Length: 111
Length: 115
Image (cartoon, rainbow over all chains, first blue to last red; front, side, top):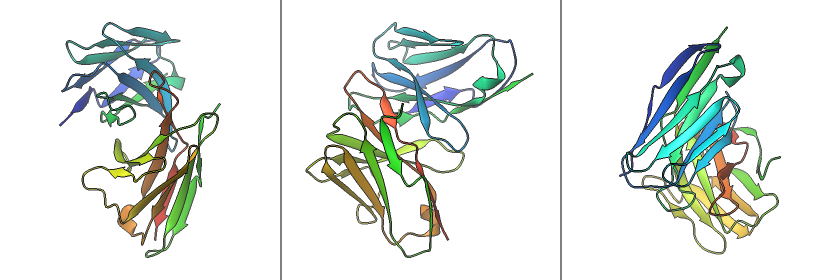
């Protein structure tokens, strides 16, 4: 059974600081997604990582994938309040669309 | 803009009644759609895969007779929660993928409350 684990589950940051969210998964996969969810809302796609070594950046967020280590990271640079949300990683073990999600990381950015 | 539309956004129903939720892919054809469920403060769990023109496939532990899925066209899948009970109250989210290299796009979700 595929397991996807995020760390940390709760993250309280000061504005301007940097931090990394980790996503470990238990089986071979070269398809990993990061999503953002605001309270009461659905999921917004952030990144699609489709190969080992993939790195993508959008604004203050950067995601990477190491398929050999079965690890993806979501790095936050110079956090701002607008980044406060829950972030999910999800793994797709070659059954396109059947995602297994991590537990989610609740990020709160304080002034 | 949104590529997957879901309706209704929220619904309150009485115990024992049935509720239908619609999911549409807006500008692409989706032979396969997916239904996820999210309980409060929890992650998303895949419930079932909706296949156009054939039966849906359900994940382990999901009652197929309770959660009826119909995928009658390439742009529409429906989920009907039959004989709803309070424990079925949840956030139901449908999704579809434009192509293999695209993210899985999620609808806006339907918050179901069964009283």
